[in-house]
Length: 307
Image (cartoon, rainbow, N blue to C red; front, top):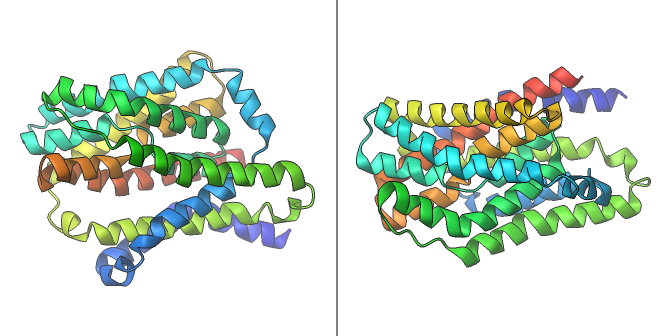
């Protein structure tokens, strides 16, 4: 019981650890740069840990209510790119930065959304399903939306996206779910460890991301930071408000809120650098850090609300 209490305290303070390690990584980036190759394995560990808290029943329940997935995907691809475009105009951002904003807005949900949903005690099975569906939809919608707003054709790396989805999300989650479904009773004593393992892994990932983006952060312009924060904030607000207005339960509202507001910013950075400019990559680079901070703060708030 004492160990469980200690673990809960550590997990509940996740945003604090994230901020501390981010500050340390910004001050001493060289310490974390060599761990760049660890991001994917660490994400797989996080996904496996989430799978260890799920059973096949969780996915069956979600599949019986597909409408909420459609709602989340609609918000993701209809409103988030529009918000990015409007914010860019409102703040008078350059064409290059606006390009980066739209690329972030047109991206699918990222794996970080699944992690934050898990920490926020949302519906993890639903979050994973939303990420899978939005990633598949992004194959067609991301180039279409980029052309609509920017009049540019951006080829999306379909094979790479689907491979990442399979290796980083689906396989580790399914492996964990399989083990938990078969050996759940025997593994019950280990359950408290998985939130702690996920929290430590994601804090380390955030620190690596901060170190990798040290130069971008050093040259950070206030309007870009404001644009990224506003975009994320509008996503969180609309992501929660729409399912709430449609009378969905609190767990579902949390899940849609986090899924919609946490984009696959890594993909937007890669596309911006390859097809546009370094300046166009700035919003995605900043977003990759900021959405982890805002998501973790929300997760902490909702965890405490449930305790």
